[in-house]
Image 1 (tube, helix red, strand yellow):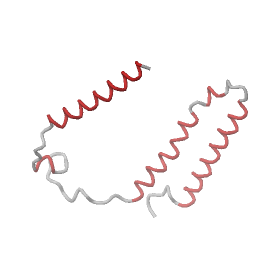
Image 2 (cartoon, rainbow, N blue to C red; image 1 turned 60 degrees about the horizontal axis):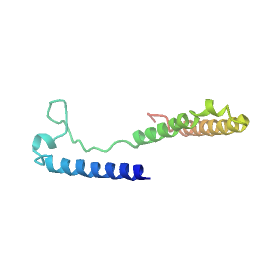
Image 3 (spheres, rainbow, N blue to C red; image 1 turned 30 degrees about the vertical axis):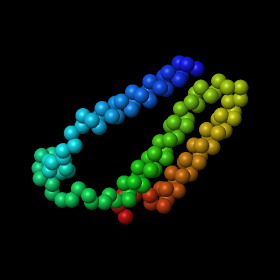
Image 4 (cartoon, rainbow, N blue to C red; image 1 turned 180 degrees about the horizontal axis):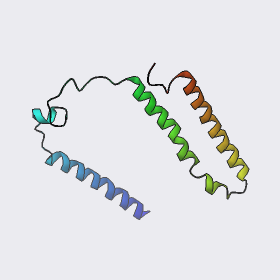
Length: 116
C-alpha cells in the first residue's frame, strides 16, 4: 500500500513540477512568423482556415471503425486454448459478420466513393 501511495504521489508531484516549469520557462512572445501557417518557405497562397470536406471525416471514422476489429480479434489465437473455444469462435464470427454487413451497407450507400 505504501509503494502505491508513494508512486502516485511521486508521479503527481513530478507532473505538477514539470507543467509549472514549462509555463515558467516558455517564451510567450509570438511574432508574425510564428503565427503564419507553414507553407514550405513560401508566402501563403490562400487562407489556411478553409473547411475540409465531410468526406475526409467520414473516411477517417470508417477507418477507425473497421480498424477496431483488429484490436478485438487480436486475442483470438490465445482464446482457442480456453475450455470452450466454440463460444469464442461464435463471438468472433458474429463480430466479423457484423463488420462485413456494415462494410457492404457503406459500399451500397456510396460512403466509400470519392466522386459522385
